[in-house]
Length: 213
Image (cartoon, rainbow, N blue to C red; front, side, top):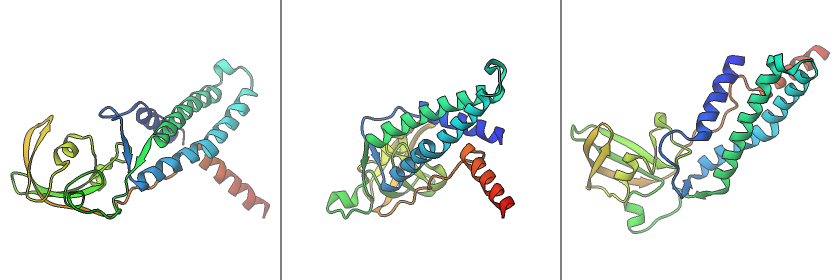
């Protein structure tokens, strides 16, 4: 459990500091992406932080804090949680929600903008489909790319039949846009991380209730 917590803490810290490209001034996000941020924020603020605070208070009552591993780890975990909460708060407050399902007309319906799903082919005629989303909802397993990524920028404002140039670290590629459409983009919902302190306490409470029955 401790190993799971440490992995989650490191992942949260990296995300709070920002992996990848610098965050643009406009924080565009889909409704599903914003909901995921809100769900994580709520979990950390109302469940995980109180649970870790309880552990820290218990550890502090056990004597010398300087040599108390539970206390030291708990304090470090609280700092990580607080940093993530601050990051999520800023992202939620600055969010500009763009719903891909909103009806569009004219070029807004036929050209690739934020929220578009684009099918394209490379020079070898290999086809790929990607959805253009916000920096907080990138998911390569679902082919969700950031609108400020090299590929996102290359596809932006393109329409079916256009040929675009992708300038990537690996070199230059020429892509042919085959289709641009808009519709619901399914975002992976927030899930309680394995080893979360709040989950451990929930299991303990459940076990205690079972013993009482």
